Length: 125
Image 1: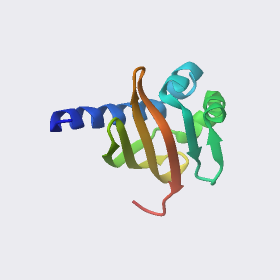
Image 2: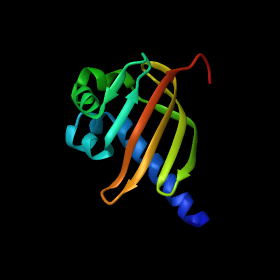
Image 3: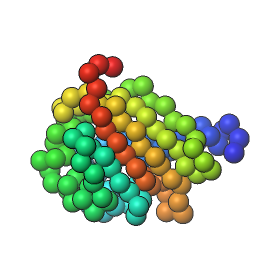
Image 4: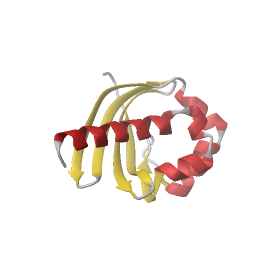
């Protein structure tokens, strides 16, 4: 992939992650389902391991979606891990505090899908 393709992929990965942070998308189980890979797993801030189904159901709960508040993303970086697979890392400031986040995204015939996500509480930026 040339530099332009890399930039396009990086922009698409960031856009997909931002969709998952959008409260309206988070409350739409079908939209979340379309962004998460069938093999999706998440390690939450608490250390809990979440399956794809766990996450789709939890995000549909308005109370959980509201904990993010108005999220502010900074320090985003995207790195290609393999053809069609990218690691996104960033700092998220939200109603639940400051967290360092990492997501692995895979290009599929149906669009970009998140395979893995982890959030870790951060003391500072």
